[in-house]
Length: 107
Image (tube, rainbow, N blue to C red; front, top):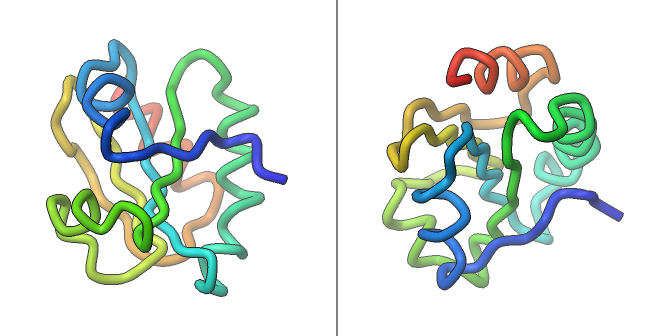
C-alpha cells in the first residue's frame, strides 16, 4: 500500500497550487505497469524528504481534467510544482536520485 496520498481535482488548488513548499504530483493509472514500478520509488522519496516536500498521486482515469490541463500525454508523468507553478516535468519511470534531486532543486 502506498504512503502517498491520492489527490482529486477538488483538492488540487489547495494542496498543490497554494502549497508553501515544493510539491511532486505523480500522474498515474491503475492499469499502467510502469506506474506500478514507480510507486515504491515515489514512496521512498516521500519518506526520505518527509516535511520538506509534499508528494501526491493523481489517477488520470478519475481526474482526466487535471491530466489534460497539465498536458499529460504519457504515464507515469511526474510534475514538480513550486509557488503554484509547474516547474519541471519528467515522463516515464525515473530513478529515485533524479526525483529527489528535482525536488531539492525547488527547495
